[in-house]
View (tube, rainbow, N blue to C red):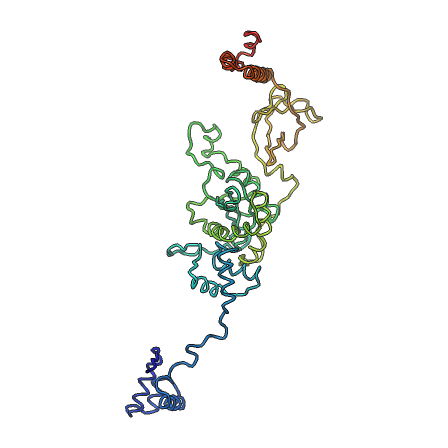
Length: 441
């Protein structure tokens, strides 16, 4: 039985030259020049060829297992973990988890080869690449910070959909602040900015999309105030007003691609953070925020890069005023003649103080803090307030509701068509509170 030998193109070239050397068509010097070898090496090849034939030209390691080959036990363990505990991880994240948690040190390429050989592809689909120009990072940390929100099934089927609000520094790629919220809202961005400023300081500029939280999106209309019409620009939103107080420049992006750094960050977190939350068993908003706080340092250690200039551009926050006075919603109100301020269906009674006997008709600022509490400020002073007594109209409405509920319970308990008719009739108590007495209650 004849043995079949397969030679690659390099080995086939050597065979052709040696055959010509054997029949005398080439000299040893010419063969050495063509093969880029020394004459001594050519003599050695020729001797082996005459003894073993074409098999002498095949590489000696052909068909042998490499000495550094990953053994089958480790391969099986990687495949098992990739399909069970660490399912849904991309190749790089799986490599990191295997090293951190399982003590299996493999390269990303090795993990990819093992999984692809087993028919397991990466869950993250790669888009068709387009030609783009890379923008140079800002030189100093704190010069330019991008913020955005990402609604995603962060907790999978263990809990509700959440929105991750995040801020990333452009110079370093460091995730400088992040918080989970039920939805993308202004209060969440206030918490995000408070976290950023208290940890690092005030950045020079903030880059965001054109969401209505950040700036007025509509065109100027007749409904605009006289001040807005005279200045030719609309008043800032609550978040815009906060940035003005912190002296942070607000820049609105014109496309999602312009916020590429924070968009790519969410792509990374949707791969890695979802797995971290699952491994920690997080199923609520509070647990998700705790896992996020623990994961941020590890994420930054792995992905952050040093800035081009070592000096930081973050400006320290002079906290003469408490965080509650700055990171809150502020509304202008005019005090009534009875020193009562009305806000969001609440009435606050301003108490007398040594600075001023009465605040009637004064313009004050109502602060709605992130914990839901209210405070009234006149200039820089926080006024002493308390709940104001209810007005007569509110008392009448409250009494009508109480009477209606009582009659409804009694007549429903008795039952019958008459009872049903009286129950329907007593729904008018809200506008005629004495109706119940008129029908013989």
